[in-house]
Length: 293
Image (cartoon, rainbow, N blue to C red; front, side, top):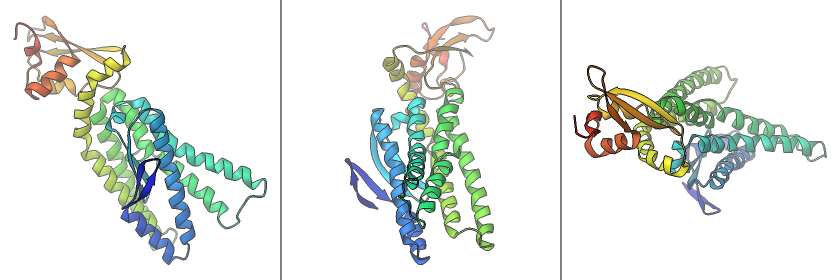
């Protein structure tokens, strides 16, 4: 549900977050729910400001039960350095407010009722979002780091699966806590939403893989210079087996061998990616050589 815009960025509130506010209203602590809304919005605006500084497109912001999501241009996911910087901006903004609140307390600016809750909520938003699991900020950092080793698609799957595992674990512990009256139902709601969002991220992995491949040619043009990696493959191997090994911020040269392991020649990743889009997944990489094999 759209609630307005800030600096030209549409702000949406997820219906489950409204349900969470409803729970706070029923419990008689609506002011705390509204404070959470403000802090989550602050967290997401920090992401959007970092993205804008790094020339990443900002589409909109959605406030969710566990935090929020700043929907950014797809180019960020294929640029690990930018993804890490933008992901860290949210938790850093919350930790800044913790330091500010503690400083103001020393000068008498403090509420005995809301002050501790303000600090607790900021710490929770910062450290919960740093858990290494998609769709949380820590999961985006983990994906960015893993993508340099295993590629974007595999890194997305690993981080999303970890998100699913963590969400199920928190949900189970939350149910036990509700039964023993040690935590509220909001913990279970948040965990279930993280599970949903992690599953959605997992399903997006093939789409991100295609986007990553489409971006590979631009990567060299924009960087000017990239470190090179060499792969060795038989000429009859389909291009799908080659492209799955491509990772961001490296340029690949593929040495082709025949069945007797004699050298036939070499191709580069631009040729392989073009072949994938033009001829399909099963196109033999050796067919890129002239004369064709």
